[in-house]
Length: 328
Image (cartoon, rainbow, N blue to C red; front, side, top):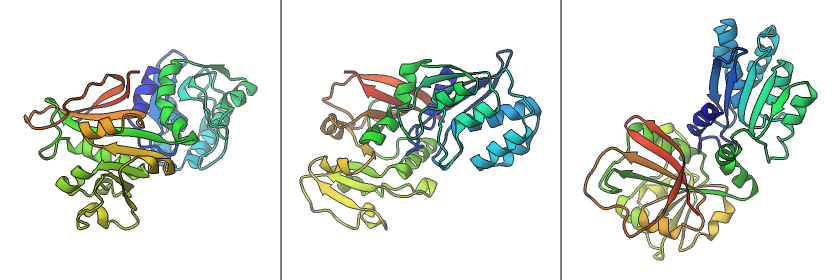
């Protein structure tokens, strides 16, 4: 389950409106057959991706790797598995889905393949997709629930928040000395990740001073994605509207001195430094930090005291990426 969690966190922030989910397949002799995750809404779920990879390893049939559609992967495995999944165990961070939507039911696929055991980290709170465990049990699959439940709930927390209300996360990039200004900080891979996350956000919040000084676009051009709406937090309403962020088709730009507009959105990123971090403290669920292994002796976070719990940490190119929550 730890491997499933680690894989899923790579795609946290990228799967909206779906949850980030990881899945691991283990063979009858406890050999590792597959580790995969749900990567983007509309793409195959974590269980389907892992079952596909395990199928290749068990059968040496790599034709399935050329299939992109979740429906077609389901069909191919069902038509060709020849009971290769007998005595196999599956670990998933979230209860396998029961409903048929953009992708078929994972619980039904697992049942049809006669997988022996399924270990579930956290039960799905989404009524439409829940009860997958019941489907598995009715079809003779042994289900073990609540494995690393707290860690799996933390992974699923954004999904649970935006299903009920909204999920808000604060993102920043810094160097080792804490500096956050004076040009580009992060690697190309980190900046691509940020743009991919922006592509699925529906609102991006930024401070007025940052807009005036940096004159940003705040789009998702590095991944050819859509630009989210913008909320500029500022007491002053006058801005130079030749600043690129004001000139993107289909985007709404709101200027306000408070966060009330957040209630009209679901998946919200706040970008900024120490002042914005202080202002947004009461509305933020998670924090996302990119740390570059450089120093520049310039301005950054100051006069702020905060403690965080690290939820996930990984390295991408030269940078460290951390998802965190505040220590209460």
